[in-house]
Image 1 (cartoon, helix red, strand yellow):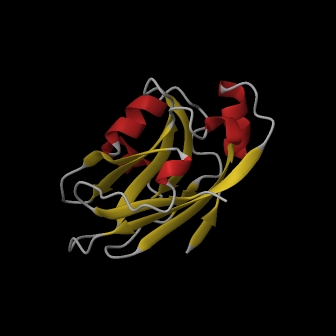
Image 2 (cartoon, one colour):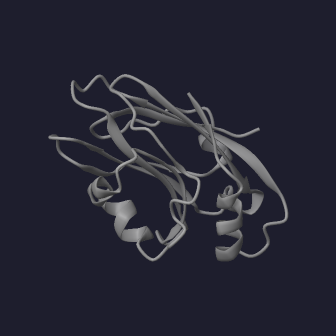
Length: 158
């Protein structure tokens, strides 16, 4: 199931980062392992070169009371009152794939930014920063393994 990211992410990044003149769609595919549990809550977010929160790209899982289990994302994004504006959907079942497309500024690519995914599954261990991938052209098309629930994260740049 494809989840196009609303332009609110570009607007949020524009507040954080100057020089957002051009953007391009970045397609992300998060393939989950068959871990044998309930659907996973996932937070897909962007950090800058210093590891500071730069914006939320997508949150899979609709019950806000469980967001505290997406520990790194929750901690880093806590000051972002608009972190969930238009970027939420259903949890993702074991063995399924979450597909997200985000319009990101060209200036973010190959500039030290990183895409991170936190994962949590009910009655199972939380996995903060389950997978981290540099937002760079050299990483496009390469699968990156997760630590616990994520089989792979891959990104595509046009």
